[in-house]
Image (cartoon, rainbow, N blue to C red; front, side, top):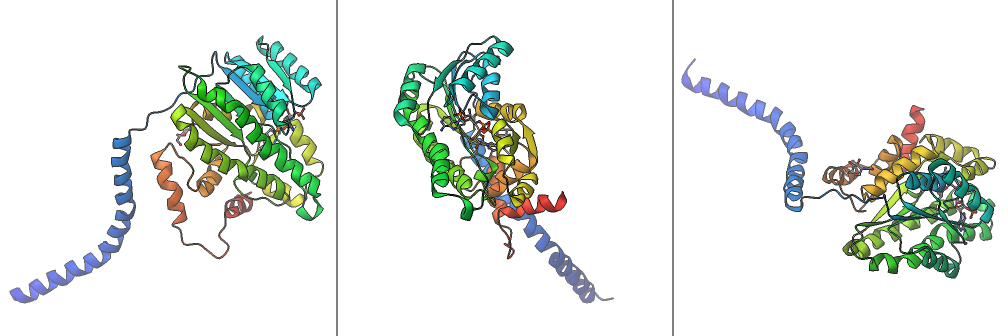
Length: 337
Ligand SMILES: NC(=O)c1ccc[n+]([C@@H]2O[C@H](COP(=O)([O-])OP(=O)(O)OC[C@H]3O[C@@H](n4cnc5c(N)ncnc54)[C@H](OP(=O)(O)O)[C@@H]3O)[C@@H](O)[C@H]2O)c1
Ligand SMILES: *[C@@H]1O[C@H](CO)[C@@H](O)[C@H](O)[C@H]1NC(C)=O
């Protein structure tokens, strides 16, 4: 073998292995570049974890007389908060008050008002005193195909879930912004997984809960300078009195889709929600399916974690298939079940 042939062999070997390596190498670079940019950004910004205290603070919960709201009231009371609950029915409020007193020894303040009535809500909130942690949890839900839903029922759903939430927040906000040296405050909204993805039978309900996403995102920008942290909570099916009632008339398709994301007990949801509120997280999912749904649907909402902020748009980079949609995740879960 002369030197020239040897060189040729060596050369072609190098070219061939380069050809084999370079696409892999490039693939490897794709996440490395943004990840290192993120690492640099994280170093510059140095995000500090937020801690919103509950002990000795005023926690105000709408819909606090039943289900998730009641479980949250129990939790806040047992953590040493001053608790106020608001709902329509005076007798349900009284019952809730008794059960909390029995379990924790804490006497909660009760306010009977309809969230659709701004003046009534405003009066109750003024009476209760400045709020540190506001939990907007009231909600109504009936699953029904839109053709079968009366216009009055659609309006009722939007009015209680969305307009009512505006009423509560608007009534509480001035005093919350004016609080001085009281530490970080929180405004949280109980949405639903049906507020992340439209679900059969939930046209009105999903619309009302999707509305909370816009409200929360805009509001967070307006109140961050007041050290107020907005949290959106996305529970799956939860075993509450409201849920029991809804089950009686749920269309079968709604039940199948909802079941793909599992179901939870009120205490579990209340714990997840309270932990998320305390951490000042914008998005709080309650189970693993909910976490996947959040990844798939978070869009451009605030994100505390640089790692998740990277993952969220990354999943959008996947080449869309003809049937690719947010419900795909539910479908995948459904197929696995
Ligand atoms: N359970 C689930 O499967 C599930 C899943 C995802 C999200 N969520 C959401 O979680 C929240 C709580 O649901 P839940 O299942 O705990 O419901 P629930 O057991 O029916 O309790 C609803 C609470 O809201 C109050 N409320 C209803 N309409 C009101 C109004 N117009 N003004 C003031 N208060 C009102 C109710 O009291 P009064 O009737 O006396 O007013 C009650 O205290 C809702 O926002 C719901 O959309 C629930
Ligand atoms: C808050 O968000 C961070 C970042 O996404 C996450 O690691 C943490 O588990 C969340 N905490 C709660 C209590 O939800």
